[in-house]
Image (cartoon, rainbow, N blue to C red):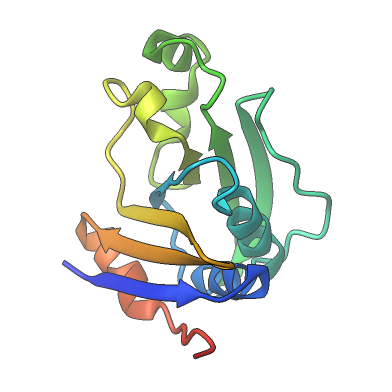
Length: 161
């Protein structure tokens, strides 16, 4: 399976990775975002959505748990659903909210704090790990499925060295 690691020197690097990832997306993709508070998960998602063509405000779904966005990928309208499960009290809340139905072959689901629903959450195609490293961030992407593998094969990103 494909694997990618880089050091992002600043928030611009995080945004550039989000933009590069937007160009590699495919319907049905599930991405788990891992990292501490302030690691850049929402900033990366915001950059990804804007690069995918979403022109409105991208807000963190910290209180709503999920925010859907409609973008065009290869001439096809696709929903990108951004989940933030940080405030979720139990995995059952995920099921009760009906979120599992969003994980299908049509939507792209990006999940912050997936460990809050790990017993009921569908498995990821990509795991993306962000960690603070000095003034920047270290990032690691791991494909876990063929769909995640093809996404990383399409990813063209070269961080500023």
